[in-house]
Structures are given as C-alpha cells and as structure tokens.
Image (cartoon, rainbow, N blue to C red):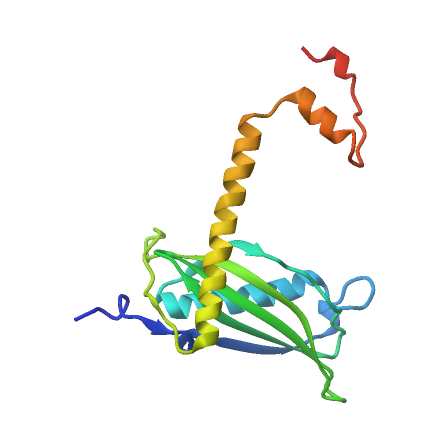
Length: 192
C-alpha cells in the first residue's frame, strides 16, 4: 500500500484561490498597486498550492513569465488562483493567474499569468520527493504537457548559456556589443 506522500494527488486537491482588497499601502508612486505587492500574493498562493500537493513545505526556485498586462487599482479586489501544472521528482510548476475586480461594476480583468517553479523540502530542509499528479481532465493533460515543455526549454536555455559563457571571448563579445545600446567606459587597448 502506498503511503500518503507517495500516492498520486489530483490537481483539484491543491488548487488554491485567495482574494484580497487592494489598499493604499499596496500603491506605488502612481497610485496603482505595486508589482511587488502582487508578486508577494502570487508567491503566497504558489507556496500554499505546492505545499498542499507535496505534503511538505516548498520553496520558490524561480518565477517564469511575469508580465503585467493591466494595472490594478487601489480599491479593487485581486483574485489569485494557483494550480499544480507539472511535477517532477522533487519539483513542481505552479501556474498562477491574477484577476482584478472592480467592486462597484463587478468587471473582471485578467492582469497576469505566471509560472512558479517550486521545490519540496523535508523537515530537515533537504530536497524531498513529491507525489505524482493525477490528471483529471484534458485541460490538466495540456497543462502538464506545457509544464514539461517549460522544463525542457529551461534546461536547453541553461545549457546554451553555459556553452556560450564557456567559450566567451572578449573580442567577439565586443563585436556583438557594438550593435547593442551600450558604451564601453574604459580603455580596451589597456587590457592585457
């Protein structure tokens, strides 16, 4: 018989939603909700969702694609939804969707979507395995497959960057930088 931590858990088991009223202390210098306030809420809901699935605390390893499409105003409700989209051995990708709602009109607006890469830790702070994910419908299958593609793309990008850095050449870098919006502020002829 499988233990509680090894048994597959359905996506619905850990799906999480929080709603919070945006107050003046959430505002930036323009009077709109500060991105940092939204990112904090997103991290909280991703943590909760991942930790529920894992049966252990999870830490944020990275955040992917944080694009703010529309500003959130003070006085609006922010609804943050999270769902485990993909699980590896000890990692999870949690999809996070943020919507804002005008309380008076009821108008809802999707403000951003992001993907939090989380890692499960045991009571000693060591990386630990997570239960498999039970996919309950075709949308869960699509999201899991997309998570797999995101994982593969991150691995490929890391490999590409590592290879480029390992073969780094100052002169070649300068040739490329000449086409970019930067200036060299030191005497390159003085370099040995």
